[in-house]
Image 1 (cartoon, rainbow, N blue to C red):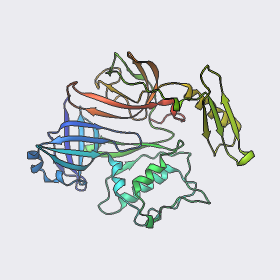
Image 2 (tube, rainbow, N blue to C red; image 1 turned 90 degrees about the vertical axis):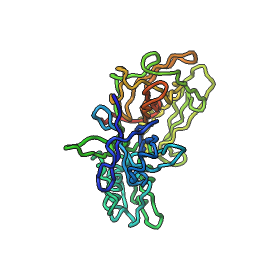
Image 3 (tube, rainbow, N blue to C red; image 1 turned 45 degrees about the vertical axis):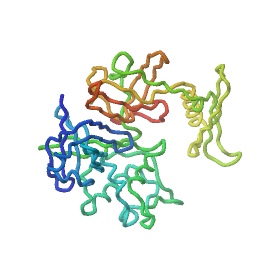
Image 4 (tube, rainbow, N blue to C red; image 1 turned 90 degrees about the horizontal axis):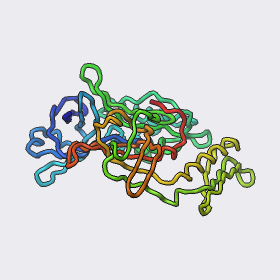
Length: 365
């Protein structure tokens, strides 16, 4: 099914070009990031739509089969020989160009034992409250049990430090016990476009039994299975709350016929030895599982996992069979890039991380 690319003025909402003749198109989302689009356009057409040359003013969209697959902000348009190279990024990239010029997000902070989901919504509300700064991005009403800022050390946003709003969001989703987000775009009522920050806790996505990636089925080429002794350990020394001799500590260790390798797991907020023991055991089990698959290429129309059937954050079972490795495991989808053309036709490069490297509870859809 053919793709359609179109452009829109970010402030007026005017459609600048309803059908852009883009070539060499690559696009896709990412976990806790904006995602990206790269493409080329002939200068002849670009001259007929001068707004396309005004980086930071134009939104680009990808539609396929009546579904908006991607949307974001054009940031760079570079003439190269007989083409114009375009680079765009999802909605959260806008916050990298915005600062807290009032301090404390104009009275929304400081924060003490605050839910990072609330702070993320406050950041977007602040950014979009200033004239010519409203992208119309809707942030999901997710909540979390994570906390930022304490009575002794509140979370501040000081104007004299020129804080970058995007960096603040990055810090809020960095810890293990923090929410996830991704950028999303969809058709709304009456042909409107909904720009959304999908926010979830403890994680985006779900463990999927209805889709899979496998060699000889929908995986192209022979993906590398990476093995690194730096990640391996059959002994985990987990430390929790407390200082000196009063520090809580649990050691989880097994003998497996391999050279003893140790890993320290520092969890300063954990006070109970039972919880600490559970975390130590889970970490030891994870580190004893050898190998990881970081990236694969798939066909987007294969029934095992057609494009649109999975989302950022999902856990999917991956099976690799080639002359180098036999590997089976659960991997978390951290992003993907659709390549709309090329010698292999349309393909999708999927970025993965070992699913057992995450400590999370039930998935949020």
